[in-house]
Amino acid sequence: MPRYSGMPPPSPPPLISIVLAVRNEARYLPRCLAALACQEYPGDRIEVLIADGGSTDGTAELARAQDGVTVIDNPAHVTPAGFNAGIRAARGEVIIILGARAEVAPDFVAQSVAALARTGADAVGGVVDSRPWDATSATARAIALALRSPFGAGGARYRYATTEQVTDTVNYGAYRREVFTRIGLFDEALAYVEDDEFNYRLRAAGGRLALSPKIRVTYYSRPALRALWRQQYHWGRNKPKVARRHPGQMRPRQAIPAAFVATVLLSSVAAPCLRPARQLLAVVVGMYGAATVLATVLAARSAAAGRDMPALVRLPLAFAAMHLGYGAGMLVGLARRVWREDRGAAPAGGDGRP
Image (cartoon, rainbow, N blue to C red; front, side, top):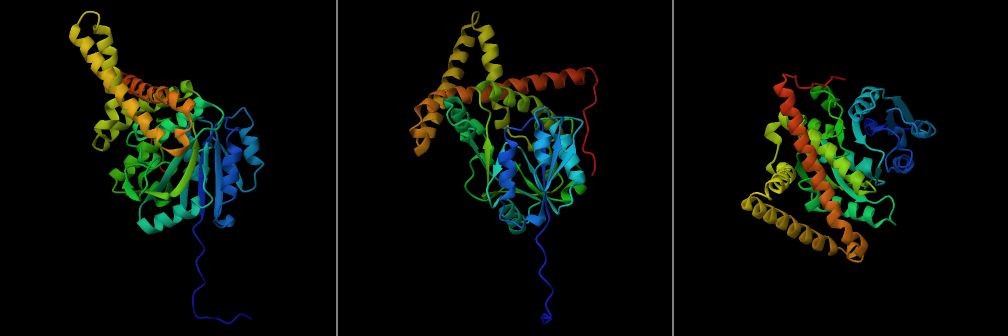
């Protein structure tokens, strides 16, 4: 018989629940699940829950065929509802929110758990490295470059941070379970920026978020400019809802794309009649053009991008799709908000408790 040492047995590492909300992601999900299956963390301490929003491309069947994966129905068909369904079913002490287009590093879970312990934060996230799914497409490579650029991503430090720091939001975050008991779940009225709203709500409740570059995720970006524009448009359109609920956490930089689009539109309409409008249009477009050139030059300084002239030529178009899409979406969101307030509509709620 083993000799009793007088010391308590070592505690097992925390159980981790990884929650994905998916719909028609059969193209991307296998690589995501393969990365989760190769984690440098005890496999019996990880559970993967996938909330499927009515996929028609075999996503749910593909997920059910994987060992250690639990598939949950998401009849609402929206991302935050899927996350909430997964969180309610999760057993873990730490809950990680992930997406099918994400391919995590082998030490992703281990580094997330270590960062929670090291920082004492309520949630931690890492750096997201955008890559094209189809590396043969120059446009797809340009989009990935734009997402990695501070000019394209703005203040989203999770795109390019190099030091561990306190932050206002995280992407693909690892949350202590008690966070969801304390502040509720994701707002199901927000189909595109639910993570920002949740993180702002956590901070408003006194929570802390930390960003660690040791936590690494590869994200496969949209393959075409139209898809990129549409994604940014939806993000921008929902941002006014978040701003209304958390005005103290908004930053002036977040309104720059909307101000740029509004200025260009209004000055273009007035330009045929008013000389000052023509001058303003020339100045604003000229400044944006100069900033785009500078950002492209800075992107070209990296060894890989510097040799990729086809992608660099298309990079200004990717920047424009991001900024114009986000700005236009925010203007539409503001207009819709004003219209609803004029008609006396009540704001949408939705921080349902687990």
